[in-house]
Length: 90
Image 1 (cartoon, rainbow, N blue to C red):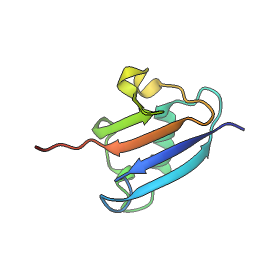
Image 2: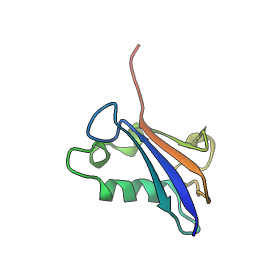
Image 3: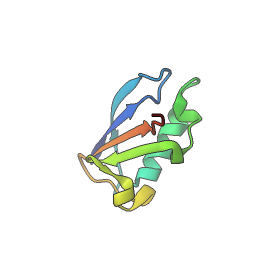
Image 4: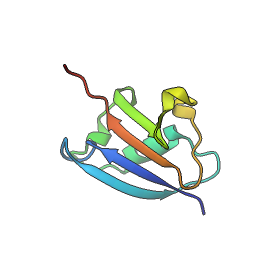
């Protein structure tokens, strides 16, 4: 079965939280599908449950999804998908 590697930065119970997960995928799985699944499975207090996806930087194999097919980017076996809140400031 195909699987992807998920990297979550600052989306757990603290701003400095990090998680590395491996998840089985079906053919045609998109970044949006992965994100919605992560949100459904999040625990109380996890930022995953409350952050809007427009507030995220998402990378597939190191490339921002805005340069791919956006949230409808399909993922493949052994892809690495990183989710992190966008940082603002100066």
